[in-house]
Amino acid sequence: MPHTHWEDFSFDGIGTRWDVSTPVPLNPSVRVRLLALVERYDADWSRFREDSTVGAMARRAGRYEMPGEAIALGGLYSSLYEISGGAMTPLIGGSLERLGYDARYTLRPAGEALPALRWEDVLDWDGRVLTTSVPLVLDIGAAGKGMLVDLLADELRSCGVDTFLVDASGDLLNGSSEPLSVALEHPYDSSKAIGTMQLPGGMSLCASASNRRSWGDGLHHVLDGTTGRPVRTAVATWAMAESALLADGLATALFFVPGADLEKTFDFSWLTVFSDGSAAYSAGFEGTLFT
Image (cartoon, rainbow, N blue to C red):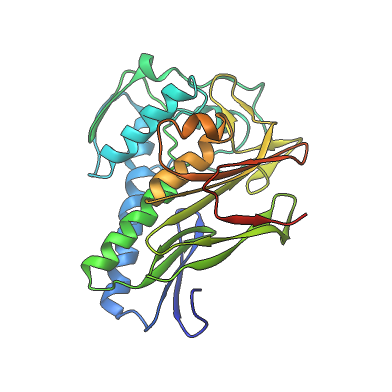
């Protein structure tokens, strides 16, 4: 938390733990609105629920109208799909299920890795409307949690709460005027840190690591859409940007695209740690790495 005397509102949502910290306890009506937003988001976007809109996409092709956040989400995914040459894609869900990361969490591969379906062949994402030509497993996990962080921040502001911290299991939005000191988790030992950084007020910091959701023989959740196989080069990334959606999406994109190349399109700071123990980071990265 930014201050030790702040109050936490903690809950589970979209498969992760959330903490909303504020100088004074949130009004019960505000808490209800936040929980309702999380439930609505999950009911639209979760590939782990048969009753979600995304669940319906997996059963039948068709035209699906999504909530307003689909516009920004689709725009970011489209850009990163192009920049990464198809490696980062919202169509990776089928490949994840193939390797065992399915709705039942079997964590047992059903066969060899399969590349994701090509976006241009099966999906038209036009603003809020997604039109599919075949049943497909949409997975927005690479940026979806960040999108929900932003939506919760907007909901807090609409309720008159203008000083807060949203922490979605390490993906942060600092909704205060004061900087926040953040420890950078060691990619191989969650009890240790490899460094620290300052998160300014009004900014978001998101991380992605191959150890966060891993199983089997070297399997983890960050797959290359062109091969369907887990990425082996990068092991942990951090991205700081003005929105959690952008920070979350870019933290995943750093597994596929050098940060210096992403900086040509996006305004953000970044750090990538590789499997050989080396690291790369942007000139604007406001952090200190331990030796």
